[in-house]
Image 1 (cartoon, one colour):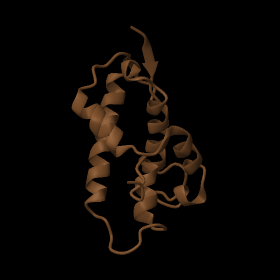
Image 2 (cartoon, helix red, strand yellow):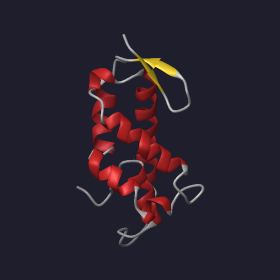
Image 3 (spheres, helix red, strand yellow):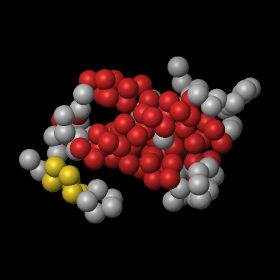
Image 4 (cartoon, one colour):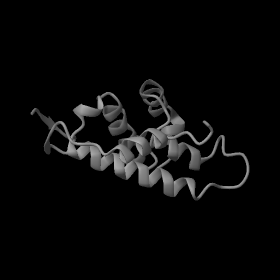
Length: 123
């Protein structure tokens, strides 16, 4: 088993068992492909939302971690990845329940969700 180093310096062994329901919910919640999410995170719109309104916001850091997770195969995921996947699923579900009325195309609500890997405009 290999060791992975997380951004906070913690290590976590690879090969976490990912329950099928978490895997399925993750695939539904994170509907932006890795390359597209990487490009999105470089935009001014991405940096305009979050708790600090810059590239270091919680949502922006989450997007960067999601990109790293998307680069892995299911069998390469760590326990830390699995915990983060659950957090992302919960965030996306809670945020979707707060959908504002009207066109959401250019809203902070949508931009925040996109930082977490979910574009509500995709079907």
